[in-house]
Image 1 (cartoon, rainbow, N blue to C red):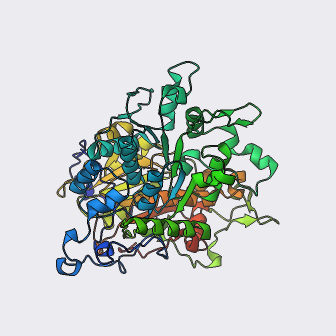
Image 2 (image 1 turned 180 degrees about the vertical axis):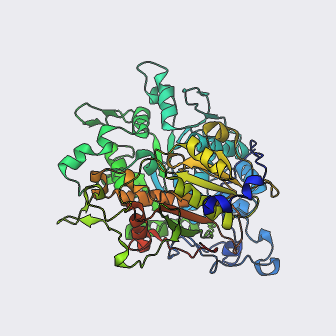
Image 3 (image 1 turned 90 degrees about the vertical axis):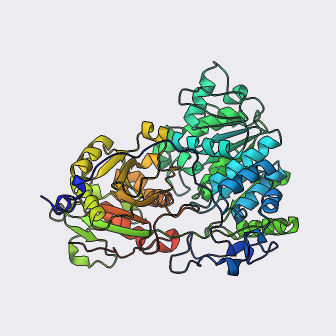
Length: 589
């Protein structure tokens, strides 16, 4: 019996009763947790231009919540006035403050976005860190648009997120809302329609020779959340002609592209020519925490925002509240702060707790070793090799030393599952919280569920049937539950009581082709890591305590390409991705 099975023996004696029941409303709101950030500053202080070293405030440096005497009474800020000046209708504000009283004012990104929506006739890019309430801002904006006789289409990456957003819309407003089912069924008279791009395409396909824009009359706005994950990897300027021809984006058009073209009335000819002449006058909003310039250029080129140049430049509001913002984007958000200040609107800079990052390699014999960024060169490990142009050479073409595991192994090695079970059993998350195991692409959910159950873990696979009913917080007295999902299902997944994420096979770079690796695929996988990490540290999500913070644990095979990719991300790329390894709180033997 391996050490993982021995460590989990006690867990196998626990009951495995599921605690899943539908929930009334999601809790993925985004507001300032510490009232002192707004109450102490007064109603005229704006913090749009506040510089940060990274996307999170660490536990050790996060301000403590003020006492009532320090912060003054809760009414020192007129929350109704703050949200009203952001363009939110009074009935929505009343429900918002009743359900989420900590939402004393919109965050800087939310306020700038809502003011842009209220101005009208502008297409908007919105980028802010994970968990800062971008999706929540879309909900509030949709309700404000409906109040002004508009109609909104919301495209989301997963059906699970669509149902959550629908629940929040119904909880905060009286608008007629409908979720488009996978087979294209929906209430066509609804003022807000939500769904995945594929569900909208199914809706359009129910009427022959009719576009989505023809079927949905009177649409004034379209919101697309997590746009870059829906588009997928895009080619970049350094690619050769042959690489461009082989790029996945040239072979398979993303569903979101077809859905937007059908809604806007944009026609793509067989020769690749794009006809914008019939584009409908619909305002578009694209939101993501990882919205980069490549994605922006792609959106411009496809005509999903109104053309840039001349007077039309005023139609685009490019809001970026991340550390990657350009000087022009920083200047724009400062300008929006001035506009907000003149209107008397109050913003609240959110404070988030930073999850801890850990990484381990597992040998073929099952030995677990923490990732060492300063690993000696005589370990037998073969780092990636580059050609004369600095491009990475696929390790599959290189000779291996001894029995090194550089070549990707088929399937998911059981040693990774055992290593995760051992770490989970020796340093368990707090009671009343979930863990989430994220499988690499191509791994069997059924097989992993069976193996983890044999190791004594209480496992629930997040299949569509489970997500359909919703996930209720586990009782504090219940055995700890580990949820299981695939990487494709992570974007948009919100689990308020999630404490730990186990990332099996690390960045999963080995799935990429040689050309994809040479074209920056590893960096793209680092974006995926950022999206997965964004499931933790979300505002209005109180999980754990400073002594037991939320965590992301990557587990890879020893001396593998995945191990090198992790060391590269945590080492050379640290300044870009803002990730740092922490020391595991338990012992590894």
